[in-house]
Image (cartoon, rainbow, N blue to C red; front, top):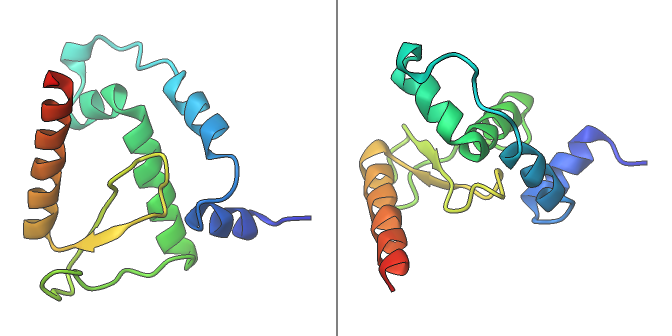
Length: 118
């Protein structure tokens, strides 16, 4: 019998049933409150349920000690953010300082625009 800790480790290794979990998250209903009354953060969460789930899973794994925060993989700065190239795998993380994280997000958005234009 697998424990929740084993399941999280399997997810980190790219094993498990991520697809069904992602489908559940993508199918969730957004807030019923009119969008104009929501804060910018709440609007973002409502529009990005998969990313919200991914961030929560990462925060939980950090808190439980399943993963540990590391230094920036580019410059070595100790103050880092977790960058998720693919939100379907919440524990596949690239540790980046704020500067390099912003650059990575910008490059990711640009590549997505280029793919959409093709």
